[in-house]
Every structure is written in C-alpha cells, then in structure tokens.
Amino acid sequence: MSAMDKLAAGRAGARIMARCDELAAISESADGLTRVYLSAEHLRANALVGEWMQAAGMRVWQDAVGNICGRYEGQRAGAQALLLGSHLDTVRNAGRYDGMLGVVAAIETVQHFHDRGIRLPLAIEIVGFADEEGTRFGITLLGSRGLTGTWPQGWVEQADANGVSVAQAMTAVGLDAAQVPSAARNADDFAAYLELHIEQGPCLEREELALGVVTAINGARRLNCRFVGMAGHAGTVPMSHRKDALAAAAQWMVYIEAQTAQRDPQLVATVGSLQCHPGAVNVIPGEVALTLDVRGPEDQALADLLDDLLSQAQAIARQRGLQFHASQYYGIPATRCDDAMQASLAQVLTQVQGRSLSLPSGAGHDAIAMAEHWPVGMLFVRCAGGVSHHPAEAVEVGDVALAIQACVDWVQALAMEPPAKSVE
Image (cartoon, rainbow, N blue to C red; front, top):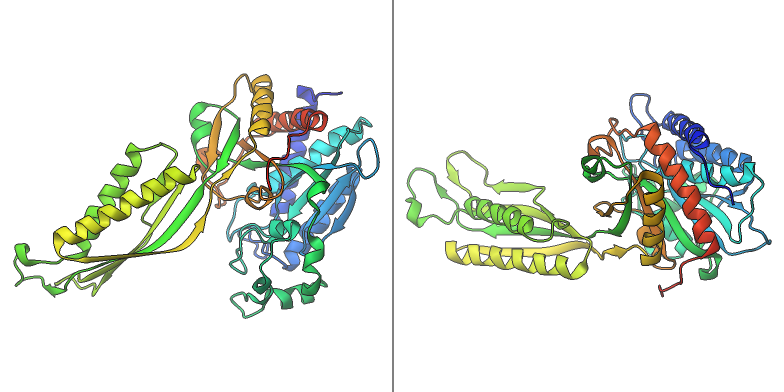
C-alpha cells in the first residue's frame, strides 16, 4: 500500500482549500455564503462535487432526497464499502469549511488511490449530504436520515418560510417525495462511516494540535422554563415582601454556571433566552421565561446534571414563595463513536502529528444518524479561534494537508480490518 507523503499531502491540501473556495462561491447571495436544501445553489454544488467525484474515478449519482453520491470500486465488484462524507448545505451567512471540508477531503482521499491505481478490499463511497443544518425547513439531518431510511412520514409536508413544502420543493427540482424510501441503503452496504469536520471549538487550537479524535457527539436537552412570582410597584413593596421572578431566575442562572463548571468539564449548560414580564422599569418582575440548553457526551451524566439543576430551581422558587415550571421540547441522546475506530485513528494521528487528542463534539453531525446503522468515526480539524457558522471560519492549509494524510492512512487501515458491527 502507498501512504501519502508530505509533498503529495501539501498539494492535496491546496486543492482542497481551492475547492472549498469554489463551493463557497455557490451562494444565494453575493455578500455571504448561504446554500439551503433543494435550492438552485444546492443543485449546482451537487453538480460540481459530482464532477470532482467522477474525475477521481467514481461512479456518481444523486439519490432520491438530493444527496450527491459516488462509488470507487474495491478489488471485487459489489464489495462492501467504507462510507466517507459530510454535508454541503449551510446555515445563513456561513463559513466555507463546515461540512464542505469533509466532502472535499473525502474526494481527495479517493483521488490518492485512483491516481496510483490502488483498489482496496473494500469499496469507498462518498456522500455529500443534502441537508444537515435544517436551515430551510427546520429539519436537521435530512440528508443522512434519507440514506438511513428514517424519514418521518410528515417531513414531506414541512413548509419553509414561504409556505413551500418539502414535497413541493422536491417536485420543483425533479425529485419525487414518493420515492424518498428508495434513498435508504441496506445495512450490509457499508462497513463503517467516516466523517472529517472542523472542530467548531477551541480545544485543538489550545493544545496546539491540527487534528483530534472525536469520542462522542454530545447529547442535548432543551427546555422552556418559567418562574412565576408577583408583579408589584417598584417603590412601594418592601424587599422582604417581594416575589421577584427575575431575582429567582438570576439566582438559578448563577447556580447553573457554577454547578456545571464543577462537574465533568465536557458538560455544558446555557441559558440562551430570557423574557421578563411585565418588563417595566418601575415594576417588580412577576414572571420570567427562560430557556435551558444542556449538553454532554454521556447520557447519564447529562441526566444527573439536569436533575440537579431543575431541583435547585424548585428549591429557589420555594424559598422565595414562587412557582417554577419546566418542559423539555427537544432531546437527543449522545452518540458514541466506535471504540475500534477511535483507537485506529488515534494511532494514525500519533504517526502523522506526534500525538493524539480525544475530545467530544458539542455540535451535531450527520454521524448521529449514521451511527444508528453503522460504526462511525470522526476526525476533527483545528479551526481558528473555534469560530464556525460565521464568515470568519478558517483553517490552515498545513492542517488540511495533515488531515488528508491521516484520512488516507485511516481508510487503508480500516479497509484491511473493518470494525466489528456492534450497532443494531
């Protein structure tokens, strides 16, 4: 087998950066990158990526939900495949590497084998997922759930801000909502799923490392919470008689910050929204609505933290003579990356950059859906300042060159010894 040398990796890294620039130019607006599901820009991006796949020796097709797919055959026709990929859609006013870097790097990985006439025991397939962000229809992991066959029936009726349903948008671009199930792949088609992605956080930069091994994609819980006290005149109600909902919320917020910080450093909690009623300068707040978002890579630790925070909120409310209510409106379990794939990637990174670092992902990825059917592994690439979902998103070409070296080595290792399937 032929590992990628530093010179070849440098050239590949430069091509990857240039192609990310090309994709970033495909946007609905000239002054910022926005590319949403089933838009004209989505189809243009698919076509361009399809051309790159074809040039890398792949058979190319677009599936029934709009994912762009390519296959590089193995040593025998019809062999099981390693699946590589990420997403091609963006948030509004996005950066140029979130999602796209993983797709382009996957193509460059295949290009390495194609240029050298190398066929592996396993085939390699690449998918540029159609919609991971959920920007247009509010549906996340739409592309990857098409591939796994886990689309809820009601998704095709979900409408965008202009009242256009998914089904109507599909019809407009030549797809058929009735054919969505045909995008699903069989469990035996793939041995594993590999995803390269920017970190979207500061840990690699802080450790002065280009690359890291993802241990898990954080589980998350989101709640709407409310403290209910009694509004009153700001000048006439003594401090000892007040039922100030905002003071209770503030006390709880300080506890949330302190208690979460004392636990596992991989746990995070955020109060991201707060509304105070009646909201007048001379009225004691009688009611405060706030949101709570808690995340972590281990479901039990996450549940324990949430139980503690909610218990403390109730205690604060009782102490102050208020009421507290909370309702969870969103929850997703933590997704563990495959242990064998983590170990093999850590070994590769030690060879490529001298040492390896393991860290969780605080953001969601297509790997969440894929892990329901196949072992998954993820490689993080350092991004400047941990910035993502923003035009300032940036990576270094040297880091990308190391990443492509790691991907080539990792794919070769897994093709020789695929992980044992332990998922249902």
